[in-house]
Amino acid sequence: MNGRPYYGWVIVSIAAASMVATLPGRTVGLGLITEPLIAELGLTRTQFANINVIATLLGSAFALIAGPLTDRWGIRVMLSAALLLLGGLVMAMSSWVTAASLMIFLVLIRGVGQSALSTISVTSVGKWFTTRLAIAMGVFSVMVAIGFSAVIVGAQSQIETQGWRSVWSVIGGCVCLLGVISMGLTRR
Image (cartoon, rainbow, N blue to C red; front, top):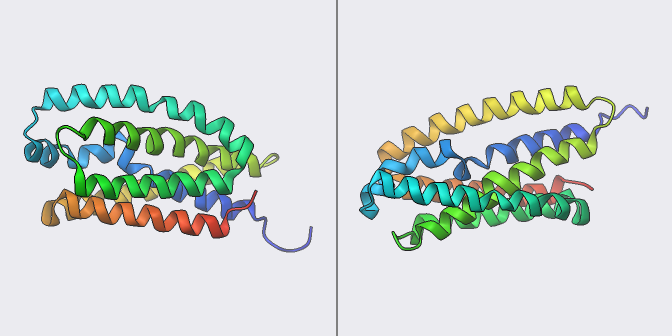
């Protein structure tokens, strides 16, 4: 042992933050904007639910692609790319979503956020830990729970006062910023 802390703990922190960044692609994240979104787009709850279930099913296929690509290109490339892509999609949705484009945005945000980014985040912990994986995953899980709690409460209060588009844009920008940080700190 050389006396320095194991770099894998930095990866656990980035992975946990990245898992929290999946919020816009998760049901709980979309639930924060569902009511104002469907009111603005003139959709019924049933129409939104139908679009959402199709987007969820199609988006789940992204996880099947993310795993092999992470093995091939590494954590740094895939984690950073997924974060930057998700952040860009969330910002684009905040500006351009219409009733006609909602399905496309939801498939992409569900696919990149909920499916691909979740897969890459969890995989990154497993790639860095072999002997203490259970401890690392426990720390990861606690960090994710705290992160989701804070972000959900904060976003919900801001959506009520500033509207969903403004908050969604800020969330997208934060996800992009995490992508840039990931580029600098994530190692193979």
